[in-house]
Amino acid sequence: MALPNQVCLVSTIFLVIFSISSLSTSAVFPNVNVPLPKVKIPIPVASSKLVGNFCNDESVGNPSFCLEALSTPKAVMAKDSTQLGILIMKLGAKNAKVMLNIYNEMIKKPSSPQLLKALNCCVEAYKYASLSFEMVSTELVEDPQTANYDVIVIDPEITK
Image (spheres, rainbow, N blue to C red):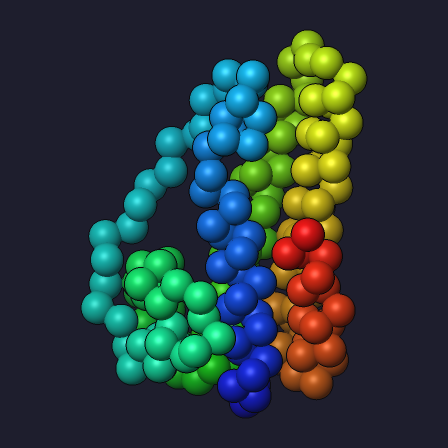
């Protein structure tokens, strides 16, 4: 079973990426007019006690967003913090891949060298995030201590 601090760190990273990725690209790049893909918003499911405790931990910056993001049947069915952590990492990886695809499409369009440089930085950041989330989701099962260490190592990069 994952340590509570480990899951909180994982949650923090997921929430940072999830909240950044949900921003409009025009908020990041005001001169780019690229429509975002339509995202299906799941119908909220009553949260489990595990999700409620997790989202109301003081290390989670936005508990209501956390509850909304984790109001899925899979999150409600999580039996322990390890399963919940794996779910969070998989959601983070999936979200990072969606944003990676958006930035890759933006790169294909004519743009200034400065914008192209910024977009390439975003592509690299989301590649890193996707790979990191996938790696940590695997480690949570195989070696929770390594997962905890890796979360601490990747946190500054993901936040940046």
